[in-house]
Image 1: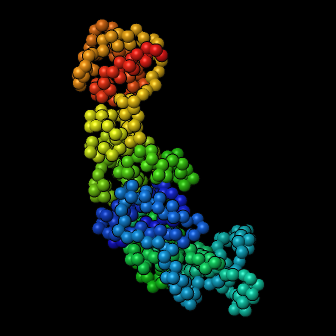
Image 2: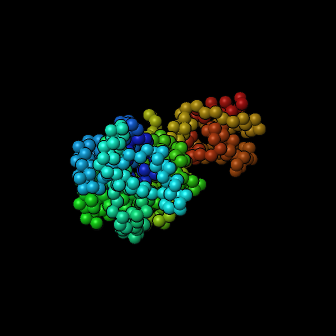
Image 3: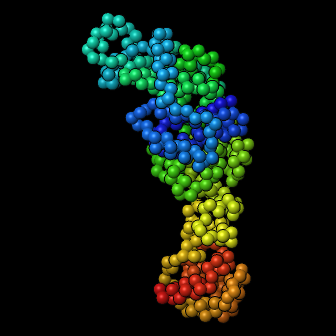
Amino acid sequence: MKVRFAPSPTGSLHVGNARLAVANWLFARKHGGTFLLRMDDTDTQRGKKEYEEGICRDLTWLGLTWDEYARQSERLERYAEIIEHLKAQGRLYPCFESEVELKYKREQRLRAGKPPIYDRAMLKMTAEQREKAEANGKVPYWRFKLSGETRCWNDLVMGDSKVKLTAVSDPVLVRADGSILYTLASVIDDMDMGITHILRGEDHMTNTGVQLDIAEALGAKPNRFTFGHLPLLLGQDGGKLSKRLGGLALSTLRHDGIEPRALVGYLARLGTSDDPQAASMDEIIQGYDISHVSRSAARFDVRQLLGLNRRVLHGMSYEDIRPYLPEGAGEDFWFAIRGNIDLAVEIAHWWAVVQGAIVAPSLSDDHDFLKDALRLLPEEPWDNTVWKRWIDVLKAETGRKGKALFLPLRLALTGEDAGPELAALLPLMGRARVEQRLKDALCN
């Protein structure tokens, strides 16, 4: 088994691309296959080296290591060889119509109640007509003559699938400048590189029928490839994700503190009836089953991702989280706060709460109570019993209890109305800092 993830380095990876990368990687790892990362970088105008580097960086962050690496830009001689072969076969034929002419033809066919597919007019062109067109400065682009058959395959996700090539226009495979298009380059690469399984989005279904036709013209057997087409990903409101990327670029999710294991685990089960789990990568691999993917479009729900991210973070040991912690933060700090964070970026906030500066709200209605709290603040040394000792004395002297007792202290000491247990935070803050924060609250 050999699979490939073949992004074009014309932009940053987002969760839609990442879902396909995850599917291919998990599928290969579960079945002992090879995972190829191939840059489809023949678009020299839009492709950039920094995008290629960004894709590699994002996949590495996700933990999706590749076994082989390739670039289409390094295979141009091979493409030229195949192009000449297809021309000699008569399967590639020259075309001279402009975009304006093609648009007019499509409109005419629609008015006549016919499907707006290419009419193959250029197949009727004589050698003399072609010479005349070229003498007038026209340069041909090249279409592939489809067989007109119905291409069928058993899809790993969609089940029995077929494409009637009579309903599809002969695709342009070579531009007028001689550059190859993805449709052909991808087939050549997949055949040359020994790809066995192709997992991609359902928007490629028609393309699959076309590429099977091309592959057969290049000598491939009908069952050369096994396909799996995953339904497109929608936003949580049902809109097209491709138009709603926003913060769903992988670089943004990474900077926001999403754990890679949470994102992989979420994408692995998105669109299935299996609940995402805060599992290890080995567990995610073993639990992956592409046959569980629904044929219906799946919705990417950021709230569900955050929920899974929370569970992953809460289960992390001190050794796992240590690279994320600020300098000086120890195991006691992590165990104190880990139940109250959804994203790793929130760690810095709680470090500021215990060791830095905060902005407390006005507590003018509780000044008398805070004065009592300051007066009754226990002397050092402080340990994990200091909170209970302090609260017991305050409760007895002021008569306060419940929210009236706890909330003013939490607001004064942390600036937040919720968060980690104060019993765990107080020893980390130390008496001097707690005393100063009570005094500051009295000045507000």
